[in-house]
Image 1: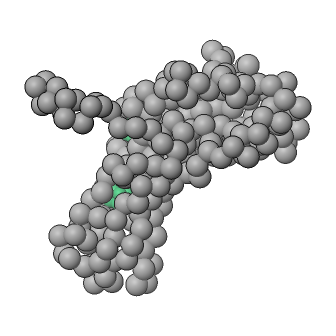
Image 2 (image 1 turned 45 degrees about the vertical axis):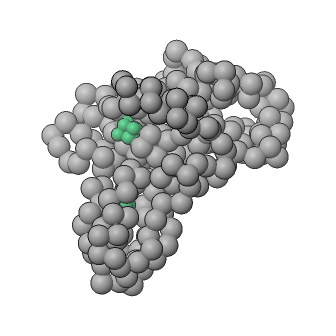
Amino acid sequence: MFKVLERIFKDKIATEQIALTGSDRLRGKIEGSCNSDCLNKCAKACPVKAFQVEGNDYKIDYKKCLFCGKCVEAVAENAAGDLHHSSNDVMPMLIEAGVEATADVLKNKLGRSLHVRHLDAGSCNACDFEMGALSNSYYDLHRYGVAFVASPRHADLLMVTGVVSRNLEQALKMSYEAMPEPKLVMACGACAAGGETYGDTYAIVGAADKVVPVDLYVPGCPPRPSAMIVALLAAADMLKEQM
Ligand code: SF4
Ligand code: SF4
């Protein structure tokens, strides 16, 4: 408590400023090189098999990546390269031109609305908290004509958070089947998109695309609200193609 107060007095702000260009404190896209001798150590350090070795190079599966920094730490410990997290989100940033183009789609094709049904298939709730932030006055999702609805029967898009647990598998299937055509599914966060976060246990089915067809993946653990907005606007564009 006293440490927090000390920081507020010292830095004048308790939280970081939000900027669409990223933040120095954000663990974003992984960049830089890693000595090929050390690549296997990075891959071993990764808890979700997102760090993949390809010959003398590496590839990150951002559907699974938790942005935990373990691979970067492994490189630092072995002084074997300059692998680092950049301050950029993996998702493309929201740009005004994109917002305007999507607003046209919403206005002309969707009656100025994209209706979203959220389904928590087994999350830790952090993705859901970030999703909740979409409705606050800073992100103000409603200004784009995007609204959350209580029933899949009223939804254009199913937004799935959390790794699909056996208890929620049927609910996910039934929600998808109840939606009218055309419909889209968004797997939001590393659990729903990659399915590796909690490993392989008796209670877990895995990623959302093991149960229903997924159209959009949003990386992050949890994804930032700005990334969710980009994905929702991209979804409106995709629906246009189907209409
Ligand atoms: S940041 Fe974490 S989850 Fe992502 S590739 Fe590195 S070790 Fe794996
Ligand atoms: S992706 Fe991360 S934040 Fe989201 S539900 Fe899974 S563990 Fe929680």
